[in-house]
Length: 83
Image (cartoon, rainbow, N blue to C red; front, side, top):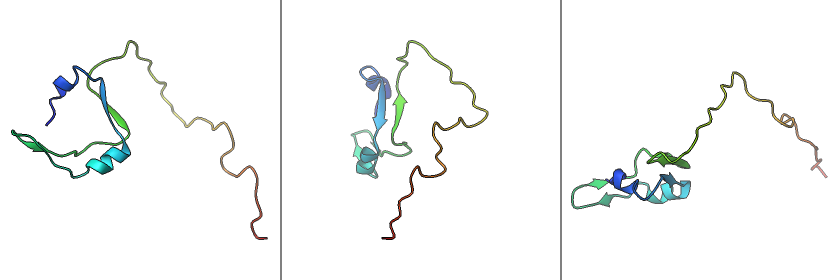
């Protein structure tokens, strides 16, 4: 099991890509004390190990979905592929 307190001395966060998740899935990591697996991690998400921000901006509460900048319900141009 990693010592996350010691990792946080040098690193702000851990980011697991989808490729890394697939490569490490069910790979057992052993140390003299114990063993661990990469279990319960979400890919493409950062796990912050320490506070490293100078300011926080609260996001607004959305009571409805925002309007799309373009009409996404229909294609912009239809192409006839029957020829």
